[in-house]
Amino acid sequence: MFFCRRLWLRYIFFFFVLPVFQVAALYAQDNQKINSTELGDKTPQELVDLIKKATPDEREQYETTLLNYPQQDLATAEQYLRVGRYFYGKEEFEKCIRYLDKAIVIARELQEYKIICYSYTIKGNCYLREGDNQSALDAYYIALDVAKSYEDLELQMITNSCLILVLQRMNQLDKAIGISERILKLIDKTSFKNTREHVRILTTINDVYLNAEHYDSVLHYAEKGIALSKHLDYKEGLVDLYIKKGMVFYHTKQYDKAFKYLLKAEDIILNFDIENKFFPKTNINYFLASCHYEQKEYDKAIAYLDRTLDSIEETDLDKMPVIQSHLLMANCYGEKKDLEKALYWHNKYLELNEEYQKNKDKTVSKIYTAEAEKLENEIENLKSDQIADKQTKTYVLIILIIVSVAFVFVVFNYRKKQKKNTVLFQDLMQKIEVLELREQEEGEQKEEVKEIIIDDIKVDEVLKGLSKLEATEYFLRSDCSLGSIAKKTKTNTTYLSKIIKMYKGKNFNSYINELRIDYVLRRLKNDKKFRSFSIVSIAKEIGYKSDNSFTKHFKAKTGLNPSYYIKKIEHMEEQLQS
Image (cartoon, rainbow, N blue to C red; front, side):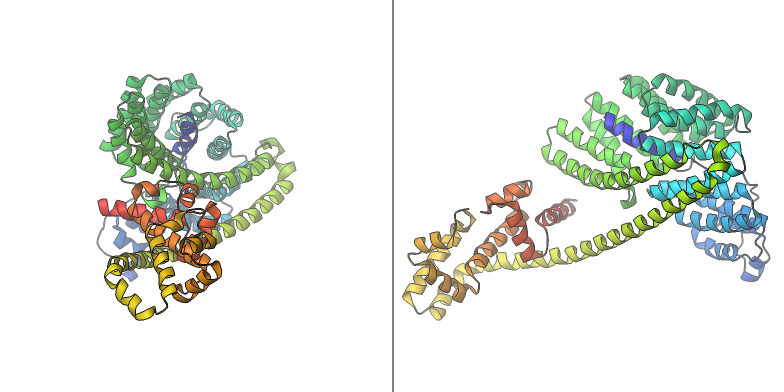
C-alpha cells in the first residue's frame, strides 16, 4: 500500500496545476448559425464566445475563422490563450496546444512575456495529463526562464508549483518541501493571497507533505485550504482537500474519518459541474476501496474499483491510480480465495506497471539531469548563468527530440507487430479447427488410405507403429528420439528416417516438433488450467528440455510467441463469457 500511495499521489497534482489567469469572457447573445461573411466581421473575442457556446459540430467554422484570423495583435493573442484554456478544461489537449502555440508566436513578436509564460505553463500541464513528461518538463523550464528574466514573482510561483511535481516524481522530497516553504512565505506579498490560486498552491504543497508522510502538516494546510475554498465557493479546491484529509486518515487507520471526507468529496463531484474529474474520481474510488479492503469488506472494495475499471479508456491505462487499482483488485480476489480472478488482475497489473516503469525510468534520469543544471540556480544568479543555461536547454532539447523520435519508432513498430500477430492468430485458430475436424474424421478414412498407398508390409508395420506412438502421445516424452522410436517400431534408425521422410514429408526432428506444437496449440486452446502454467513448465510438459527451444519451434510454426497466443486465447474466452 505504501508503494501504491507514493506513486499515484503524484497524479493528483495534475488536477490543480492549472494556469492562473482570467481573461474577460463575454458571451455572444446571438446563437444562430453565422455565414462566412458574417464570421469574417467577428472579433477574436466574439469568435471565442461562439466556440464556447457552440456544439462540437458547430465549432468547426468558428475555429477555422479564429485560427486564420488576419490581425496578429495583443487582443488576438489573449483570445488564443483564452480558448486554449477552455479546451484544456474540456481535456481536448491537442486543440489546446494548437491555440497556445498561436498565442506564443504573437506574444514573442510583441514581447508579451506573461502570455508566453502562461501558454508554456498550460502546455506543460497538457503534456503531463497525456503522460509526456519530457515535453512537460521542457515547457515548464521555458516558462520559468521567462518569469525569472522579467523578475515576475507570481509567475515564478506558478511555474515552481509545476516543478514541485517533477521533484516528487524523482523522490526529491526535501527539495520539493524547500520550494514549497519559500512559496508559502512569499504568497502574502502577491495578489494570490486569499484567491483560488492560494488554494491551488496549498493543494500542491500538501501533495509534497503527503508524500513525505508529514500528516500533521497535511491536515494543517488542508484546514486552511478548506476554509478558503468555502469562502470562495471553490468546489475543485474542496474536492482535492477533502480527498487529502481522507487519505491521511486512511494511512493513520482512522477509517471512519477517512470515509467521511472521501464521501464528502464524492458528493461534490456528483452534484456539481467541476473540471477534470478523472483523477479525483479515480482516487476517491481507490481510497474508499482501500478502506473497505483494510476492514475485510472485499465485495464493497471490488464495487468501488469496478466504478473505475469499467469506465476507463485505453489512454487511461498508463495512469498510476488506474494501474494500482488493478493491483488492489487482485488483492481483493486473493483474499476471497478466487485465485483465477486474482491471477488475472495481477497479470494485468504486472503488464501495465512494467510499461509504466520503463517510461518512468527514462523520464527520471532525464529530469534529474535537467534539475541538477537548472533548479540549483537562484533568481539572483540568472543573469550570470543565462548563457550556460541556454546551452543546457539546447542540449536537453536535442536529447528530447532524439528520445521522442525513438519513442515514435518503437510505438510504430509495436503497433505494426500487433496487427500482424492478430492476423496470424486468426489464421492459426482456423488451422486448429481444421486439424481437430481432421482428427475426428481420421478413424473412418484411415484404413482406406493405407490400402491405397502402402504396399510394403514392413513400411506398413512401421507406419502403424508410428500411429500407435502418436495416439499414446509418446512424442511428449523428453527421451523421445529417433533411436527410441526405431526400437519401438522394430526397425533401424536409417530405415525409420527414410520412412518418415517419404510418408510424412519431413525429417525426424520436424516431425516430432510438429506433433508437439500441434498438441500444445490444441491443449492451450481447450485447457484453461494448462494456460496458467509458466512457459518453462509448458515446455517440459511437452518434452522440451528448455523453454527457449520450445519458444523457437512454436514461433517457427505459428509466427507467434507462446505468451501472446495464451493471452489472445484468454481474451477470446473473456469476450465469449461477457
